Image (tube, rainbow, N blue to C red):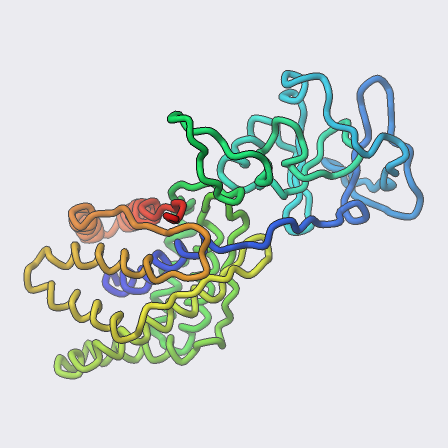
Length: 374
């Protein structure tokens, strides 16, 4: 189980990091004025004057109310009263055509810092006539079109196009993660269900990853896209069990299946419902060479960990369609001792969910987005 899980989990870890630096088209703003609720003003006994004919949902209530017309309040109105007044407000933001919230401003700023809310995200708070881009609210979020920040040395900091750099992270509910790993392994053992269990696993894992500047990440692949890769991989596992000679012959074939899987994962990533122009362009021959080198390095007992780290960095260098560069910071020594800990923990069975989650969280956190060198 441990060997199967580690082999199947590794592709998503490598590839899902690559989606993050995709070049989303900027400036797309949802026209929510006819789709989402405008809220009533509570201060000073003032209320929006409802416009007829557009029923909407009031935040925090199951009742419907009429959409508030722009004539009730100046469309350019901004939250007033200074920073202290803004901090006391509750905020809503739009994601995939749906309103999210309310959030206190301190939590909203945390979402901005993590990249869940970008400069182009529509936001609303009490006192605003209409939804507006976060960048249009003074002091809330930086606008990518503004002047560049000044570094401590006095020079301008290179612009990232509104996307912050930083490491990836992943939120893995303990038993949710364990259940999906078990389904993945069972599907692989039964072979036939593997396209469905594998695709479902990658989709779920994608939804748990947080990447700076890339909110609402998703994997959109379908089980029928490369069903033959899943089937062939499952059959190769049985070949490796029953015949050691065939196992050696199956190594390059298995590596080629792995290579196809990575390309499929890279080509089906999205953010905020928009496809990301990501592609993995590493050659199949080189990829197979890395796989064979990893097997050969097992002779040294520990050398495989350094080969694995170098292999991951090679994969990162062959990500195309990215605005930012994806780098891997993990070292061979870190991979080695953490893998040993996982092996020991899995030997006692009960710690399996905890050690697998611990390892995967660390591995994902070793991928970082940085501005590409000019």
